[in-house]
Every structure is written in structure tokens, then in C-alpha cells.
Length: 212
Image (spheres, one colour):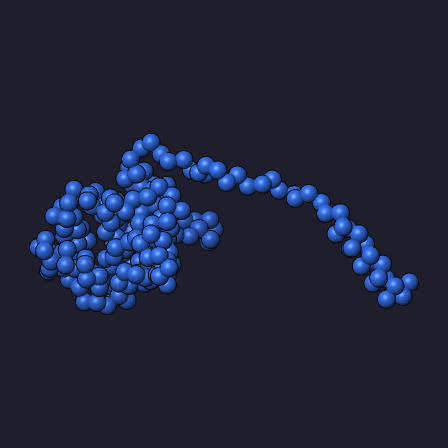
């Protein structure tokens, strides 16, 4: 059989096979119901549990004054001489609660810790949802050796899909150019299956949750 005859024979077999399509190999996806039902427990408890399980450091604050007291105590305990923060709303919050003395040089590469806000807290996975809509939302949680995130109870959601629905409701069609999830400090076990923390990002992550 020459090449052209072989090709025609193969095409006839393909056309014959396409005329009798096989049933789909997978069952239809179930579109009704949530894959992760809403929990009975409080979202703040679930988030705190998952966040600390992933080596995050969690602190609950009844109000902004308590937030600043706890944050000031942390800065003093750790001996941080430079906390990076360019977020004007956060700086204004600190100033009106007597923390205008926070040592901020504005040098992200040489700071001891960075201070940011977030878009949402995902309780089920203990994750922070961050975006470029906030000052240094791309880099503040990545380049500093320690990341401190300030969030409010109204930002708690159950699952990642809820967090993105919140983003859509906030920004509509003008979504931030960068959106990412941070789940605990940077860690890897690529080398000899030994867990190493702080290799590709912050070695410590703090979340201060403020009641609002």
C-alpha cells in the first residue's frame, strides 16, 4: 500500500469513528450545593485554628486601641528598628492611637518587618487574600523577613470562592492587577524532605484580627 492509499485508509477510519461518538468518559459535574458546607463554628475561630496550624501567629483585638497596644508590644519584644509600611489608612490608624512613633524608613529590602492590610481572610484554609489595590500589595508580604497583616472581622469569609466574590463586589470590572493568597510563612521540604521555613518569603507571618 502506497503512502496516499495508506493516508486515505486512515482518514476513512477516523471519519467512521467520528460518526459514532462514544459517551463522555466522565460523569456530569454536580453543580448544586457547595463543596464545603458553611461551618457551624465562628469563622474567626476556624481561621485562627487553621492559620496557627500553618505556623502563623494570630492575635485577636477588641478594637483599634488594643491592636496598637499589642502591635507596640510586639515591635518592642522583637526589637524591630524598621517596620515597612506605606499604607496611608494604616499609618493614620496608628497615629490616632498613639503609635505615630513606629520606626518606618520605607526601605522594604532592609526592614525588619512589613505591615499591610488584606482583602479578605479565608477561614477554611487559614489564608490571607492580598491585592495590589493596597499600598505595596505585590511586595509587602513577600520581600520582608516578617509579614504583619492587619484585618477586620468583617473581612472573614469561609472559602476562597467567597473571597473572590467579595473582590468582585468591591471592584466590579476594575479588578486589581495582582491578587494572591498567602497561607502561612514561606516553607519548603524539597531538600531531603526536611521542612525549612522562610526560604522564598517571610519566615514569620502575623495576623492581627480587629473586631469591627
